[in-house]
Each structure stands twice: as C-alpha cells, then as structure tokens.
Length: 328
Ligand code: NCD
Image (cartoon, rainbow, N blue to C red; front, side):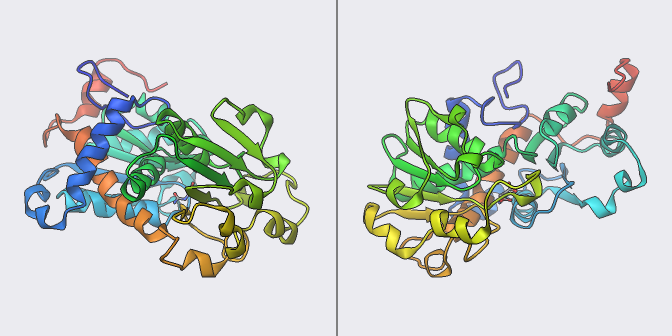
C-alpha cells in the first residue's frame, strides 16, 4: 500500500501491492540471501522498534519476523495471546493504542479475524504488516513462496502450479492465487468440492476434484493443511477419505514434470495432506528453503517499510490524539 510518495506504507494484502512493489521487495530480499553482506545491513533498523502482536498460534511466521528484525538491528518485542490484556477484556483498539504509546515503528499482526490488520493500520502511525488475518490474506507467505519458486525455476510466468487442500479457508492459498496469477502462472486448484467453490474459476485458474490427475505436467505443487479451526461443521467425510484423494503420494509425482518442486507453508500434517517420504525428499521438497527465504523476504519488507522512518523519542500516538483522532 503506497503513501503519497509512492513508497510502501503498510503490507496488508497482496491485492493492494503493485507488481513494482513486489519486485522491489524481491530485489532487496535477494541481497539478504547473501550471508557475506551481513555487516552492511545489521544496523539498518537500529533504534527502531518492531512489535510482533500474534493473537493466533504461530511458530515459523513469528520466529521469522523476529529473526528478520533482529538481523537488521531492530529492538523486537513479541506479544502472544496468553500475555495480553485482551484476555482480561481489553479491546483491540486499547491494546493497540497502548502499544503505540511506546513509539513502535512496525507492528506485525496476526489475528483470527479477517480485516483486523487493515483496521489496525487505520488507527496507528506505525507501518503495519499483516502476518495472517483469518481466512483473508497472508501476504508475506505468498511473497516468500513466490520468491522461492523464482529461485528454483527462474520465472513464474507460464509455470503450471497446483495448489491443493483447503482452498476455501486458507489465507495462504488466497494470497498465492492473487500473486502467482498476477505474475502469469497457470493455476490448478485442487480440493473437495466443499472446499473449492466455483467462484475461484478464472481463465488462468482451473478447478480439480482429485489430486493425481491435476498433477499432469505440474512444475510446482503446493500442499495446504486442512484449516479445521476455521471450519464450522463438517466439510469432508473423513480424514481417511481426504487423505486418499487429496494426500500427496510419491506415485502421483510420475505425472508431474521431472523437476517438479513440492511446497508447504507449514505446519504440516504428515500422513494427511503429504506423505513424509516426499516432505523429506530433497529431490522434490523445498519446504525448508521456503523457511529460509522467508527471513530474507521479511527483512526486505521491514527495510522498505522503515526506509523513511527515523528513531525518535517523539510520541506519534500523542500527536494523533491531540489532533483529535478518536480511534473509531
Ligand atoms: C499458515 C497460516 O498460518 O496461515 N502457516 C504459516 O503462516 N506458515 C498455514 C496454516 O496454518 O496452515
């Protein structure tokens, strides 16, 4: 999302990023994949504060943001649901206002409700990064997935990319569908009809209700977890049947291109959406490379968002309150 000068102000969704901004993130992330450049970037965020507000469980995304911020020299504070006063009945608005009074520069937010990051961004002066909001979007996951594919394949345009699983509830799927589509990939979405409504169909997107045949000439296969915590009611007859039709097995890969890569954003449910022998096979699996690339991509996001910010003792929240803004 650009400010008046065309630079990045927040990263709330892939939908709101231009391709120029995406390429700027990738270009900078590329420099952060070179370990020997460490000394050149370790003070870029010195005296800036990054707060990771994670109101939903996370292992890799929170750690990845923490590491990215620390590698750039920022002061980092992590806040998990059990540690917040939200548990004591405080409103999200009051929590955010309290955090802002501590002069944060970047707020990384994960929240169970779609739209939460956007809401917060309208009430703080800090740059906001959406680290996953409900079933809506997870923009930095799509950026790191796309960056990983580009590293492996050298391009996105024209690739056959299958995304399989709980497309309906997955914010990772939604952000990837938008970004990979914008960059010219041919997408095959695979899942049970209950988790793959017709509304996803577009000229560059085909829908498939069985995994094996959808892998014909695939260059990339992205497997997703069933988002049981977001399902109200039953969307699949049983885990066994789901595994039978939509679990990735080695034999299915015969249909794909020989240099197919297998991706998963994690956390994986081994034996459900993916068999262990494929998840751990370095010939196909780039799952750990996704984690590695994630740190570089998030460093680039943090750097671009703070380029024009300077460490300050001024309190931006107080300015805002004095200006009569009432935090609707
Ligand atoms: C994903 C998420 O939280 O949306 N995980 C992640 O960020 N790596 C995917 C998931 O939870 O299934």
